[in-house]
Length: 139
Ligand SMILES: [Zn+2]
Image (cartoon, rainbow, N blue to C red; front, top):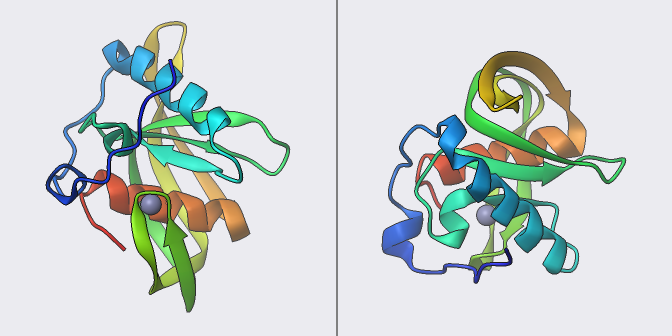
């Protein structure tokens, strides 16, 4: 279901609770809402008002993935970049890393499975932005 975006800083700055397999409907809402926004490639649960550590992103092939409970384990090649946000008006300058190693959970057959994967470039940047959202950190 397409949800309204939340711009309330009190909600956006609340650190998110761990997400569980029961949050699968939230992941679907995120995917539906993301698809409804032009030029958007990622969306965190708290941006639709659900303070759970969960987000969706679209990869270079246009496929949408949901990541539960993401943690950045390692980051290499930091550089300052200007970044904008769907739920924050002013673009800001932040340090983002070119290569990251992430642990996260993926929903497989109704259960969360622990994963570890490396990401680079644009997808790595989006994931770092989304992990900040999950921590309640506004860029
Ligand atoms: Zn954002």
